[in-house]
Length: 98
Image 1 (cartoon, helix red, strand yellow):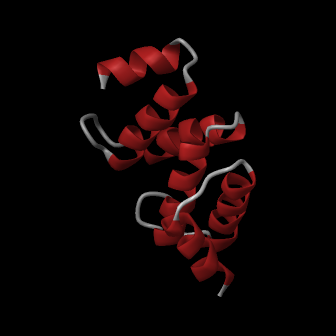
Image 2 (spheres, helix red, strand yellow):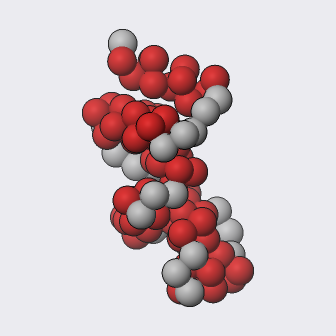
């Protein structure tokens, strides 16, 4: 976690996304879902596709972040438009459309 925190503090988007996920889930550090969600949103807003996909999944499930199908669908569409591929992403988007 120290490595991700250091990268996040230096402005690395991937580190911001992973550190945010660790905070949101309490993996390796004390859980802080609000700050974790904020960091992942910042990374996604700045164009990090992995953060977009993670946010979509977390919002669909609703255990770590609030369940929000509209936000999950939004992030799947943005990630797809940014070139993200994979059957998992397309399956998630199709499930959310239903």
